[in-house]
Amino acid sequence: MPTDESEGPSGHPRRDGECGEGHACTPEELAFLLGGLLVELGTKIQEAGVEGVRIITEAEAQQTHLHWFREGWTQHAQSTNPTP
Image 1 (cartoon, rainbow, N blue to C red):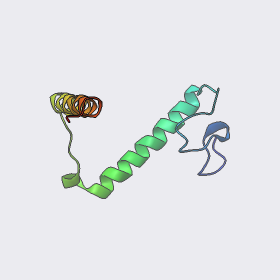
Image 2: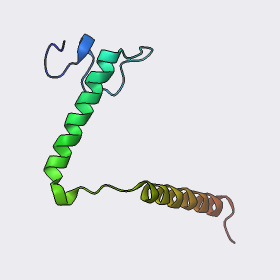
Image 3: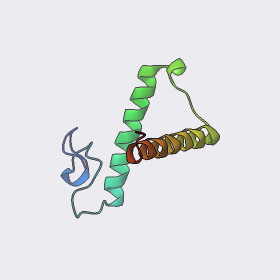
């Protein structure tokens, strides 16, 4: 178990996001990292308040991704084929 608040199972940093280079996370380590992420998310939601949180639909997410993708290709085309 964690030795203090800054370390997770097996001494891994709590907010590392990775279990270490060349080291696969154990189920316990992964559960600890996920738990930390959920606690952090809960804190952010609590700070933002009910009015500050918006849940988007799958269609909205796809539209955002499509817009981002199209903008990227437009910028790419402009940078590779500048008008004289």
